[in-house]
Image (cartoon, rainbow, N blue to C red; front, top):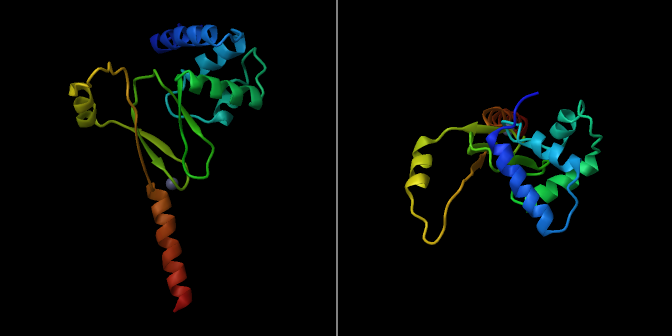
Length: 162
Ligand SMILES: [Zn+2]
């Protein structure tokens, strides 16, 4: 049994007070899903979570996962990013390891990248009347393999019209 990460411990407290404040039940499934969410290193979708929960003692249907994700999103424990026309991907908000992501708007590929210069400027910025805790940067665009597909398609259409 692995020990809980400090990120999860922090998230757990946030969920405790969110459920209390909104008079919602502290179900074990909700905490199990929160813990699983905080075990991902990369952005994940509901199907990744379904896979992750396969061996869990909690029987979580897709709709339970989906509803819990909405709840966790409202509690700011999950962040949602949505590549065009794709399933939403989620990121655990208090996992501070990776904070910068490149998202392909064609295929939905998400890659985490390190941008130390951006990190430094965010840390050095003084925000008036605001205590910053974390930040996430998404850069959307087209990944290399989609660029190549588009390029090939352009060549083919060009040949056909000749
Ligand atoms: Zn792509």
